[in-house]
Image 1 (spheres, rainbow, N blue to C red):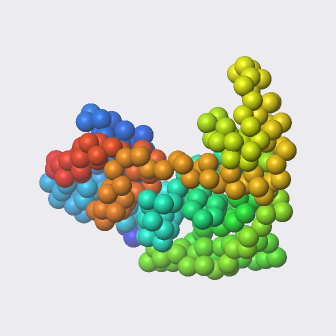
Image 2: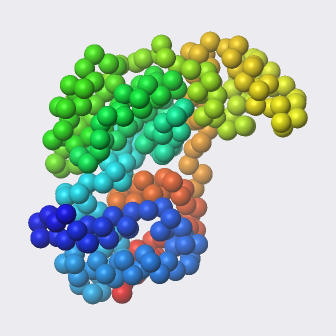
Length: 291
């Protein structure tokens, strides 16, 4: 694939920059040779000088992907920037990436006053499994959105006509707009699915919050005994405890990183890595570094 004179190799190398794994060594103050070689290779191919800072390369690579290839990362980063940071307050909203729900994995989940799941469909994605995915999401989340490019949004609107799922369109200027409003849908909530999506400490919280008690049992019996208690609650009541439990997965690290406009291309990665203030400082130093 080549766009505007940009080779397929350049697009692939640019996409390789947007991986949480690539930045873990950087946060520890260590070198990631693969990352640095990728940045070095991209400088001239992105039209930058040999002394352009690492952060400038990251920014140009992101802009390249946003205007041409638009991989899933670009959409996920838009959700992080426009909804998690822009529309809600990052201090009171929880965003979770790659959240398993039953037999599916939601690309993003946002928990605030409500809990919503987001499914990304790029221009290269096959829509055939969407119905199955949404059926799983509604077992844990009463509001679901499909996020897709404006050029194919009408296709998803038609596909989802008569369903409660919403469609969010990504415009050519990377703006998000509602192509189809979502509707609250609680009829398919499943205690079993929500229960299986929680961590052990969150399950204990949910049982206590619902007044069901937390049985003291050996680890080998814990799952079954906890589940038996959970199944005593109506699904809508368990969802309230489920949502509150997930809201405890707040940002523990440096919140200022999410508000820094120079770090916008990396916001989704930062959300995954949740850097401490010292790790954020190391990242900034690396981004300012030149060849």
